[in-house]
Length: 407
Image (cartoon, rainbow, N blue to C red; front, side, top):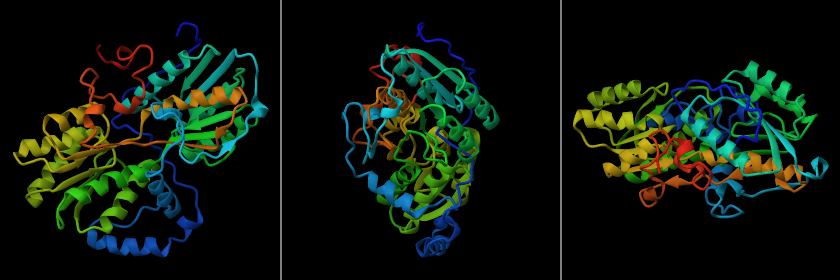
């Protein structure tokens, strides 16, 4: 990476949970202002199911669209899912064409404060290094602070960048800064969204509804009718996590499972273990555990092991420690994913835009699910416990050492 300079990156500490989480409330929409009859019915049914009221983040149209996307075939090279797109609606970028290369890309990063973001950030840097047309790459880390990212974006728009990539810390608060940047240069937003369509493209996998439904549907399939399920969430009021739970709730409400508890873990392993132990003591047994993020899945499993009872059907994520536990103990498990390979795509998009090539206005990437049938494909014993399997980084220079692995 010696030819890429400067890298203006301040790494933050490791937070307790992964995934692309924002704490903004969603913009008021017709759906949210006037809950649909279906939502109201669901909320009533939920009282019996033990899932409570539906989240105010729930938007029926988005839920329906994401669940439908799971069955669609993405366009693009099958061996490069970070280049694929589901139902792409292409837009012209001819107005941004800059011939001759020598591109200066800039990146405003929300943070690198959890393992998911750290894996993605390494992949983005490696993707940049692949392209000789990029002669300068400037990145600023907002350290999870909205005010710093607003300042960062303003600073980057004055540094002679040819294109700006933004991963917003929060949605609504960062929207004005992104709008201002759109007036000065082509902007690519990925991971978390903003409340404007001014970016040339917005890139992310299918989304939280698909993630939540994948886990809940697995439990409905594996847990007998009347079985007891514990739902573990990280935090309330975080959009991507709220959509994961609201999709799971919709699934459980239509099932014959008993959701005996919906608890917040703060993404803390010790708290997760304590909650599961308490529910085991209270109910005698649990038949399934649903989680909105898998970072503490191993802690939940250890609670069953410590109690000397079988581990029930469990939902995790593509973090290596969970996948290894799953394999070693022959668990009944599933791992929805929010692939970190999406960090490669904005760099590819920026180059397409600067070359005047069409890009999808909304660039939806595939969001695979890890099952017992394909688990071995994603197990990487040479990688660290907090590595995310769907990094799409295996063919990048420096793998596996740059990502903390061993050859």
